[in-house]
Image (cartoon, rainbow, N blue to C red; front, side, top):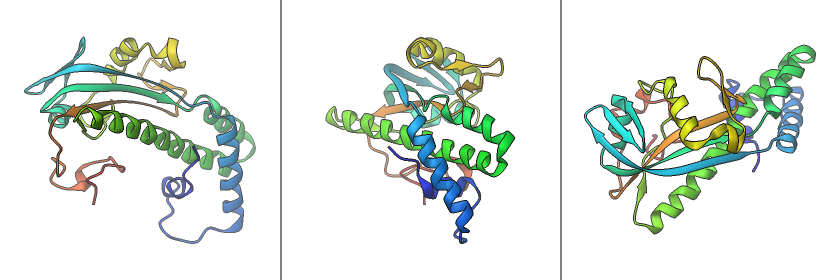
Length: 213
């Protein structure tokens, strides 16, 4: 797995403009260092899923979220996923924030790109396994998006034993450490959606959705 250079540039705000040689070199050096030192780890578990109104019962967790309920409606099962690329990005950001702020910014963007690429790979594996059972995936949905509150991180961490299994911890504000980490709910449905349930892509922050136009 490699850092997605194009996605890193997008996080940095590049929109088709030319890079100068210095930025290009910094990007390549940063990507190589991050790839060499990162330790991607993940844990996932499938649970029964029931949706009634704005409430979702997922395993032993009860979630109130209209947006997540809309995403999971029709799903009898769902996957809880947690993934991290480890502490390397955080350590690099801390170090380069003192010596090279430009590189620190690139690490921040490259780390975000790297964890997204890793979770995309994990999601694709889940997709293949689900297809063998005649099931289809709904777009993954993470705490902190819409009305799916960050407080549910505590329940997800407890259910997946994130600290014990992949070394993830939560701050008092329910932010994950290492910071380049993701938790998500992925619905499993017997019916394949042919379109997104939102009116426009502008209403959604999910960049890697299969329905994005």
